Amino acid sequence: MKVIEILSMIDDPSKRGEVADYINNHESEYSKLIDAAFSQSADGMEETRRRLLDLVDLLNQRIATEIIEHAIFDTDANIRIRGLKAAYRNMVDILNEELLCILDDRKSDFEARKWIVHILATTDSETFGRRLRSLARNHDEGIEIRKEAIFALTNVADDESLGTLCAVLGDSEVEIRRSGAWALSKLGDNSTINCLFAALEDEDSKVRDWAIRALRDMDDARALQGLADALHSVEPEEQIRMIRLVVEKRSEIILRAIAELLSSPDTEVRRVAAWAMGVSPYPPAAGSLEALSDDEDEQTRYYAKAALRRLGSVDPSDFGLVL
Image 1 (cartoon, rainbow, N blue to C red):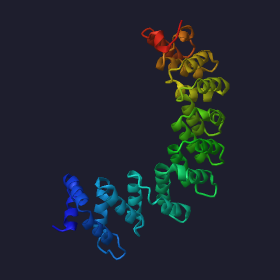
Image 2: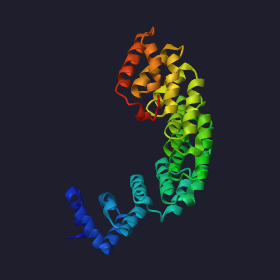
Image 3: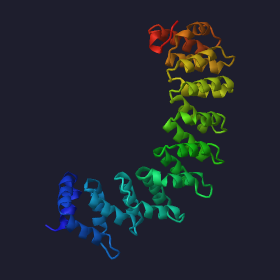
Image 4: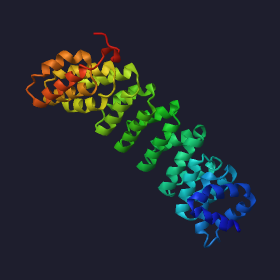
């Protein structure tokens, strides 16, 4: 059976493993087919190229890399993107210097540049980290490719990259600030606490939300105390949003701060704080919740009573609390 006929068997998904094994054991035959399929004069070989790329993840490293290298520099844009995606999945790094040239060419299409950013970050962040940091900060670049560089820096996470992510929190573009705050929330590094505190005052609510999440999830007393302090210093509308974001953090620092808002003069703040005490019961809040059982607001009374019922089944030692 001809090599191209064997390859066509992958149209039956159950045969893919069998075909991949055959190709891995007959590399020289398929190297010739790969060269022919991706040659500039390869008219009518589109289906063969597609099948080779469909199979690439099952092939050994040498032959998979050969397919990927051909695909990345193919004249067909869809084949190029499929080749780049395969390079990312298979951690192919031998083409990185060539890929950097494509990334540096702003005339290259965005989709190709995006995948190259992530390939460089995951395969050799030590070599290309500086280039990615520069791309993230570069106001002459488009916002979308800058955002991809920011996302990619979460795979680098050295001091310089953390510094860049903090720096972009002060960017003039809100989309960049949002991306930077998201990236820091994913990394959860306590060296970024101070810049996240500053982001709590950003004019954009989504930036603030990601900063809150980042601080909330750090399990760092200073981060949590900063959130607790902010909870008391912001306007009622912001207090409500913050309560909803931090309530599930079963931290004494956070729960105490929410409990203190049970006596807020703002009805909506009291209501949401009472609701929060039902989501994450906090025994020291029992007295304040009992007082809210007679609150002028019906919903507040409902949430306060619901929280008290939950407290009846809660062991304070579960929270590390001594009453």
